[in-house]
Image (cartoon, rainbow, N blue to C red; front, side, top):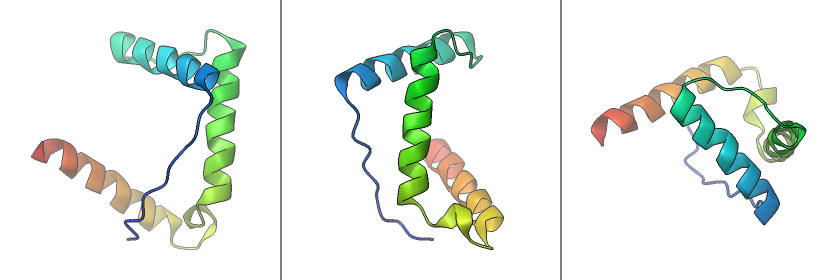
Length: 79
C-alpha cells in the first residue's frame, strides 16, 4: 500500500468546528451532528479526500480499505 502522506488544510473556523465535534465524540463515544457547521466541515473533508485519493474508485478498494484499517489498529497496539 502507498505510504504517501496527505495533508488537509483547514481554515481556523473549520478546525474549531471539527475539534468540537471530535472532542464531543471522544467524551460521549457517540458521533452526532449538533450544528449544521459540523455537517459542512465533514462534507468539506470528504470533498478533499474524494479529490485526493484514487483508491476509493478502484476495483481493489475494499481490500485496500481493510488493509489500511488493520494497519491503523496495529499501529495503535504498538504504541
